[in-house]
Image 1 (cartoon, rainbow, N blue to C red):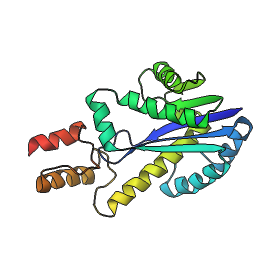
Image 2 (cartoon, rainbow, N blue to C red; image 1 turned 135 degrees about the horizontal axis):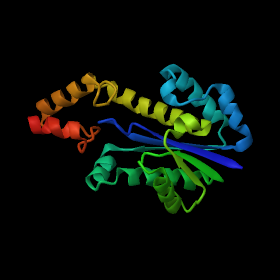
Image 3 (cartoon, rainbow, N blue to C red; image 1 turned 60 degrees about the vertical axis):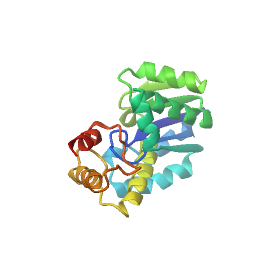
Length: 206
């Protein structure tokens, strides 16, 4: 009985990729995740997340991680279908891992609608979609760790050349970076999501 968990990281960020991660595991091994101390990535320190990332990959029967670039995110936001983009990538995880049952963290206000969409796209009808699945199901907590560590690595890579903070609009370092970059170059860097309202506001102001 293969159980799969899927989660995202970086959805609200104004720069960098949106990461979708999933892993599958035999149902009887789920307790190994709990015993390792796996929980929602937001409740763990970066160091502990990295430590658990390696352990999760060791015990997973299979896993798949996708990075969605800002260009694809912008194209979906323009068509008002960011949720559909996430559903498409989550369906890709389900198709690759082919589990018996998948638990997904819903980004849609209507979790059952989101689950149905993934089910249709992946041709797999055992999709269980919930809000806060990352704190309710240990398999989704494990997926949240894979997604978060992958996303953090992508941001760390960008940070080698730019002082851009966390990438979130609530981070003044990030907003300062995007504003200064645009003011100086009159274009946004390719890793910034141009469809995001805070970014559009910066463009309008200059």
